[in-house]
Length: 99
Image 1 (tube, helix red, strand yellow):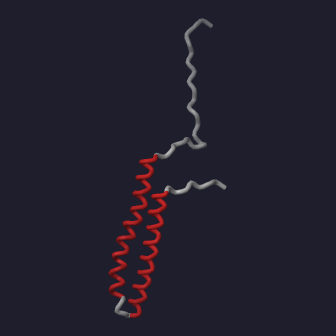
Image 2: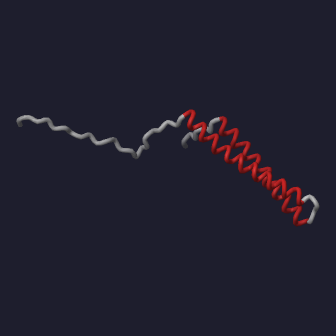
Image 3: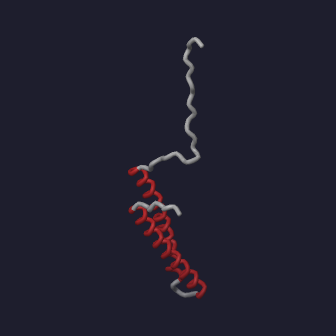
Protein backbone atom coordinates (compact mmCIF):
# COMPACT_ATOMS: atom_id res chain seq x y z
CA UNK A 1 0.00 0.00 0.00
CA UNK A 2 2.66 2.49 1.04
CA UNK A 3 6.22 2.20 -0.18
CA UNK A 4 8.43 1.58 2.82
CA UNK A 5 11.67 3.52 2.75
CA UNK A 6 14.71 1.34 2.41
CA UNK A 7 17.33 1.28 5.15
CA UNK A 8 20.56 3.08 4.29
CA UNK A 9 23.38 0.77 3.17
CA UNK A 10 25.57 1.05 6.31
CA UNK A 11 22.59 0.40 8.59
CA UNK A 12 21.43 -2.55 6.50
CA UNK A 13 24.94 -4.03 6.49
CA UNK A 14 25.15 -3.75 10.28
CA UNK A 15 21.68 -5.27 10.65
CA UNK A 16 22.53 -8.28 8.47
CA UNK A 17 25.78 -8.79 10.37
CA UNK A 18 23.94 -8.64 13.69
CA UNK A 19 21.29 -11.07 12.47
CA UNK A 20 23.89 -13.62 11.40
CA UNK A 21 25.79 -13.31 14.68
CA UNK A 22 22.61 -13.71 16.73
CA UNK A 23 21.62 -16.75 14.67
CA UNK A 24 25.00 -18.40 15.24
CA UNK A 25 24.74 -17.61 18.95
CA UNK A 26 21.33 -19.28 19.16
CA UNK A 27 22.66 -22.38 17.38
CA UNK A 28 25.58 -22.49 19.82
CA UNK A 29 23.17 -22.21 22.72
CA UNK A 30 21.11 -25.14 21.45
CA UNK A 31 24.23 -27.26 20.98
CA UNK A 32 25.43 -26.34 24.46
CA UNK A 33 22.09 -27.32 25.99
CA UNK A 34 21.93 -30.62 24.11
CA UNK A 35 25.54 -31.46 24.97
CA UNK A 36 24.86 -30.67 28.62
CA UNK A 37 21.81 -32.92 28.65
CA UNK A 38 23.77 -35.71 27.00
CA UNK A 39 26.72 -35.19 29.39
CA UNK A 40 29.19 -34.92 26.51
CA UNK A 41 32.67 -33.44 27.01
CA UNK A 42 31.88 -30.75 24.43
CA UNK A 43 29.35 -29.12 26.78
CA UNK A 44 31.84 -26.96 28.71
CA UNK A 45 33.63 -25.48 25.66
CA UNK A 46 30.27 -24.80 24.04
CA UNK A 47 29.00 -22.96 27.12
CA UNK A 48 32.15 -20.82 27.20
CA UNK A 49 31.88 -20.01 23.49
CA UNK A 50 28.17 -19.25 23.88
CA UNK A 51 28.92 -16.71 26.60
CA UNK A 52 31.54 -15.08 24.39
CA UNK A 53 29.14 -15.09 21.42
CA UNK A 54 26.46 -13.46 23.55
CA UNK A 55 28.82 -10.58 24.27
CA UNK A 56 29.63 -10.26 20.55
CA UNK A 57 25.93 -10.44 19.60
CA UNK A 58 25.09 -7.69 22.08
CA UNK A 59 27.86 -5.56 20.61
CA UNK A 60 26.54 -6.21 17.07
CA UNK A 61 23.00 -5.19 17.98
CA UNK A 62 24.30 -2.00 19.61
CA UNK A 63 26.32 -1.38 16.45
CA UNK A 64 23.10 -1.35 14.43
CA UNK A 65 21.60 1.25 16.75
CA UNK A 66 24.72 3.44 16.76
CA UNK A 67 25.12 3.20 12.98
CA UNK A 68 21.50 4.25 12.51
CA UNK A 69 21.92 7.25 14.82
CA UNK A 70 25.15 8.33 13.13
CA UNK A 71 23.56 8.05 9.68
CA UNK A 72 20.61 10.17 10.83
CA UNK A 73 22.92 12.84 12.22
CA UNK A 74 25.12 13.00 9.12
CA UNK A 75 22.43 12.87 6.46
CA UNK A 76 19.57 14.44 8.34
CA UNK A 77 15.96 13.47 8.49
CA UNK A 78 13.44 15.62 6.70
CA UNK A 79 10.86 16.81 9.15
CA UNK A 80 7.42 17.37 7.69
CA UNK A 81 4.27 18.25 9.58
CA UNK A 82 1.81 15.44 9.93
CA UNK A 83 -1.56 15.54 8.23
CA UNK A 84 -3.13 16.25 11.62
CA UNK A 85 -1.15 19.45 12.07
CA UNK A 86 -3.26 22.58 11.77
CA UNK A 87 -2.06 25.79 10.26
CA UNK A 88 -1.50 28.67 12.63
CA UNK A 89 -4.54 30.90 13.02
CA UNK A 90 -4.11 34.32 11.48
CA UNK A 91 -4.51 37.21 13.83
CA UNK A 92 -6.40 40.13 12.37
CA UNK A 93 -4.93 43.46 13.19
CA UNK A 94 -7.43 46.30 13.38
CA UNK A 95 -6.14 49.59 12.29
CA UNK A 96 -7.39 52.64 14.04
CA UNK A 97 -9.65 54.80 11.93
CA UNK A 98 -13.07 56.39 11.71
CA UNK A 99 -15.94 54.05 10.94
